[in-house]
Image (tube, rainbow, N blue to C red; front, side):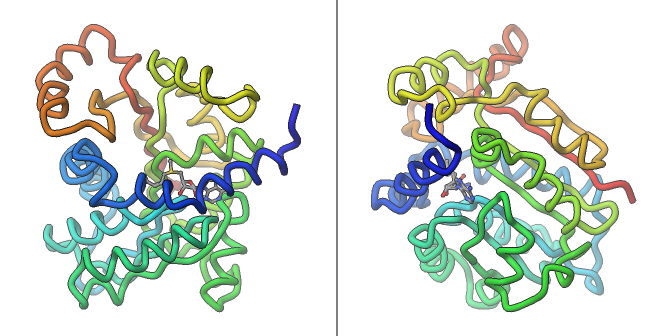
Length: 276
Ligand SMILES: C[S@@+](CC[C@H](N)C(=O)[O-])C[C@H]1O[C@@H](n2cnc3c(N)ncnc32)[C@H](O)[C@@H]1O
């Protein structure tokens, strides 16, 4: 059995590789994820903004994505918000991989107009020390980020906090860094989707390294941190790596599958709001 430090080191090695850059960059990640970023995921983020966050030109949004990889989600979100006339004051993307942070910074330069790009900063920060590491990287004090953000998102990264036994640390920091009424959106792998379970079983030796939380386990650290849970469900039948044809087929059968086997969809979604 490995220690949490050994497990974290292994994850780190995986995420500083060129393969990781390819897997988590918009041009090379796959048609499926690009479709989701502009449709299903964008809709979830915009629903959170429209339902819970009041914006005005005087009070533009402050947004953070933790475990952002090469920045696909936060870059698309900044662009979608601007297109939807929701002003953004600033956005941050954090990840513990300096290689992915560097790649995200480059991707933002090409993926965003200069006026949007200047608002987006990528920093090296660990999910389990989010407030402290972000403050250090941004040249600020941890208190400066207390109650600072309106919206914090995490996509396919919170499971690593669970694997390290650090989910409470991450959720507590997110709670601290959100303003009252602020919202956290978490999207991650569903442990009930059969293909994820069997893939992890066959590719990773240590069960701790392959652990996938249940939907309740994803939600629990947020509940314990003091959040109100607004959404807790499984959704999405489109693999990130799917090509154009498979994405279309999955879009067609998805609504039917959601009715007959909703809890076995590919992703788990938790939307949590800090009490206003
Ligand atoms: C599956 S990738 C998802 C990347 C990105 N969110 C996306 O959806 O494209 C998981 C990400 O979590 C990051 N990660 C894993 N453990 C982390 C930790 N302890 N602290 C910060 N980032 C971590 C990895 O570097 C990687 O970028």
